[in-house]
Length: 409
Image (cartoon, rainbow, N blue to C red; front, side):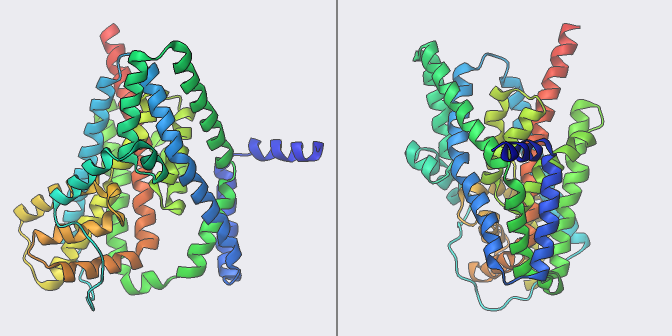
């Protein structure tokens, strides 16, 4: 028993990032050496499934508890945060437009793919509003974060107005219990990453690069430029200080996990844990992180824009600057609703293509290609989106603190 405790203490004392890196290397090596040992991939499946299972409960209780206990002063932070989320998504869409004009991509379109895509922005927002008022228990069980946020805020306000201090403390204690469970789960992240990397390497290999290399490079290039240049610049304009230490922390501790889990929902607990390590205000980040998983969609905006313009180039549609600018707006609005649509950002490609007069049958072929390259596209997209949630949460809080210090002085 003592030996087990010593091993456990040694395990938890070792840097989580180092343990994840070791798991990554071992997973890649096993994927190349013994690709038929598919049982190894179960580790990744179990890890992601566990995070997905606990994340909705965590978000609900944390948001309700934070709203019930919150004092004043959060409003200005949320205004700054939402402005950062929306502006960065729009910049990502415009960056994708520029990249597509500088390095145009054409696709090999074959038989039309099958799928159910939204017909326009009205469909997207109708879906969002419908999800918002879904039964709260059903929202938690189905990981409908729009509904979870809506009902958690409503219940949190009701608790603040009507509940006794004892009841509010009980809700807060329950939130702490769920948070502890999440911390235990995160300790097993190295094994989960090992399994996820093994599955990716053993199943996909290098075929994605050989067939769709140009498209993958354009998508990844736009996302990396957005992550490493545009988002830090936006943060610098607000804080007037070097944003890269914060950015690299977010990429290392949030983006790395999100890259392999390929799930913003699964990364919510990891992001909240990172916010706690950064000593951010729990009342703020318990709402801002799940909100970011819904509307901070830089990677989705890049995917929608690049893929729709690739279809336009392939079928010979002339895209003017005005129409490209409008596409950026459409991609921004659509990306903010991507998490509420089955299939995420890819199924919003036909919606964007419709503004160029491109039919659904042709556009759905691009969706099929998107699923083929998804092992890379979706990984980088999720890493960009999820790390940006923490990055802009910290930026908004530091900006608010700076304003308060200036006011006091």
